Length: 174
Image 1 (cartoon, rainbow, N blue to C red):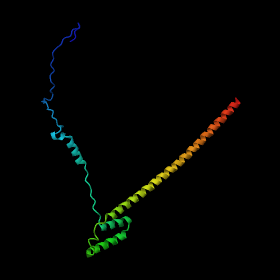
Image 2 (cartoon, rainbow, N blue to C red):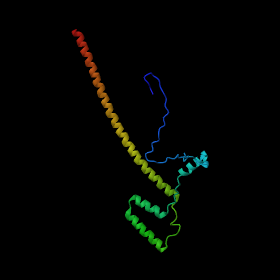
Image 3 (cartoon, one colour):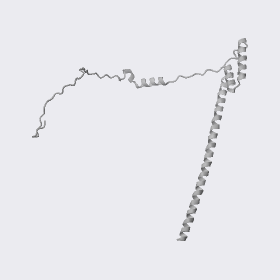
Image 4 (cartoon, rainbow, N blue to C red):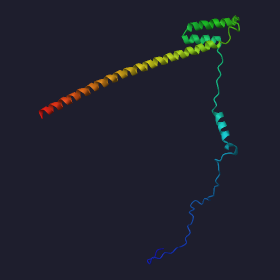
């Protein structure tokens, strides 16, 4: 310790362990829980696994049979009474065995394609109507802004003319 003369002495001191709860602590070995298995280290395997997980199943469309095609058409057109009559007559003919396999076969693709194209045309007409409406609003906004611009431009010219007139009047008086 420090003495009045300025000399220092070192003492050896042992610090007793604080053992309040008398618990025996053991060393825990460090385990590598997050290690990669030997086969998982391959990058190609990881990409292949990822690709398999992300592949989506594909849906196949079955061709539409004649009665479903007619039903869908009648429902789409809102012809409920005609639909009821069609179903009644269709099932009556099926019960009597008056329909051939040729009558009940699949609708040719051209009719289905025409139906899809008709739906597309309807959607595109709606889109055109929306775009025309947006263009009309933009045109009205443009005309309004142009009128405001012209008004402010004329006001500015009037102020400049008045300023010049006042300057000339001041020069005459001075």
